[in-house]
Amino acid sequence: MDGTEVDLSAVTANDIQAASGVAHSDVLLAFADAIVAADDRVLQHTRHGVLEAMGPEAMVDSAGVASNFERMVRIADATGIPLDDRMAKASKEVRETLELERFLAFKESD
Figure (cartoon, helix red, strand yellow):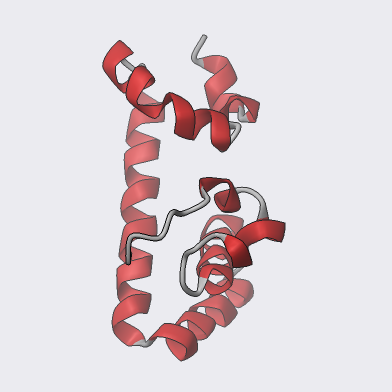
């Protein structure tokens, strides 16, 4: 990043992604959505979009970041790892911005 502030709400609000401050946010969000959607045709299309817009290295990096995040979330969910007080304080603003409490995993953690 170049010091520009990033609007995190663009992660869950596609209508404001262009103004988020993240280069190629539309392509990256489409790719992320396709990764979790389980539709191989859509995934292939969005993967090609990342390749065209950002190049092969960025596509591999993007796939790696998404895969690692998915892995960490699945491990945390499967083992029931709670959010400790320190991390709860550090992530409060991000969790509120992204409205994470609307997801089932958050509701089940109470």
